[in-house]
Length: 278
Picture 1 (cartoon, rainbow, N blue to C red):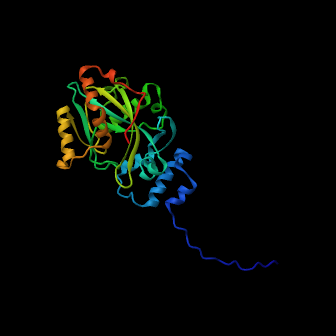
Picture 2: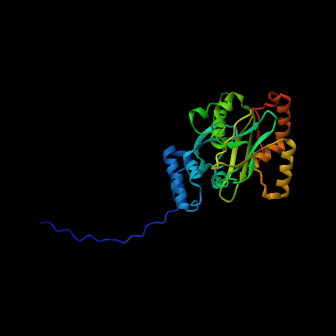
Picture 3: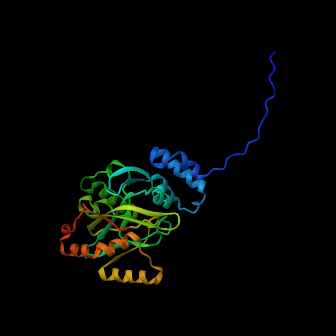
């Protein structure tokens, strides 16, 4: 009978898990969407600093796939909302995603504003335009003709955030006016780097805000908005405005608002230009 020498056991120490270990071998834009969501979740767990994230916002961060674009708005890929909003990816990889900002006016030409909820990952409790979000990497929201994909996404998010029924905001009633490219850090970890479609719509709507998304709403006329800006600039009442909303106000809003009141909004359309406001 053959005899084998005794097997020696060697004590080993598990290697520590570092986020950089994942990044060395895999890039989020090179792997499947399912695995990308798992990658983002494991990365977040490894970092260990997202335990306070609201459950709804966490789900959206890992499930929503944003559309990655270049600075000419050509689609170059897709990635999780989580990865798209990490300042590390924005600064080191110049990660840029498509977005939209809706400006909804009632029949009195008052603009509907929202205050973002306290649980939002980026820019919580700031006041901003009616709705700001992202078209997702899905067929219905990738349609390029007449910005139909973005308009479909805007209709979806007005329902999600403000409870506005789809029939109150038909997609053919949105007017895409222009696009802007901007970058804005929210804190040390999160931020925005977006190619933002600016959409106007004039409709009287029923509003039922989703508390997971929206803390408060108000309609304002031009003078009331100017007072809101004054308070924000003076630091009164702790009032803050989103950086993208402020860029639109400072560069476009009032002249476009005048077109709304005059019924000449089509004259303001310029979808060929991407305004780089960085």
